[in-house]
Image (tube, rainbow, N blue to C red):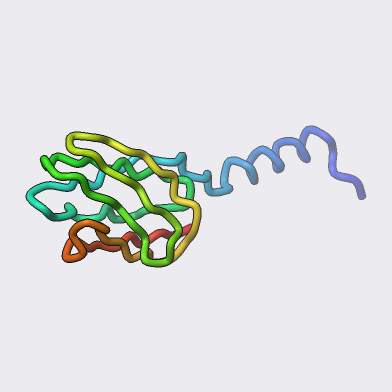
Length: 107
């Protein structure tokens, strides 16, 4: 027995409406200030963007230990980077190795 077209379209529309929507990518800031990285944002996902904001008077870097990124951050500069992989990414400043942090990125 075939399903009438109108009923089929209604059911298909209801199924699409019930499907979870993929969240739009977001932009998060990580601020460098007083020789330290600020806290990493929670809830990061692949496709989101991190804007690194250097509020110090010194040059810093945001360098991933796994070599997935290495950004130069001049004083008072802002640099954006898109998250491309899941997992925990430890990072540090090449110029000040005591400055460290980590990003936790989900799907």
